[in-house]
Amino acid sequence: KVDLTPAYILHHRPYRETSLLLDVFSQDHGRVSLIAKGVRNKKRNQQGLFQLYQPLLLSWFGYGELHTVNA
Image (cartoon, rainbow, N blue to C red; front, side, top):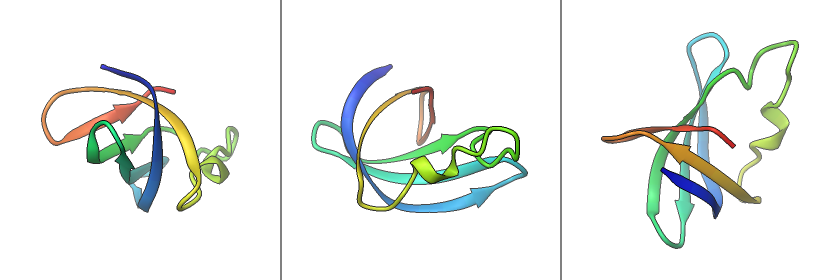
């Protein structure tokens, strides 16, 4: 689990109905692939938070190649 690390979004693309696949770069962890679940939901429209090249504080969890964003 990684908590609130500074990161930049390099690329994002739609995944399934309401999710986004993100490629982010973090100074501590390098390039990481993440999935942001539910951000394209019409009721919770959070897709605007994930703009390219904007500094963010991200938290994620998971094992293997694809991790899940939780904050």
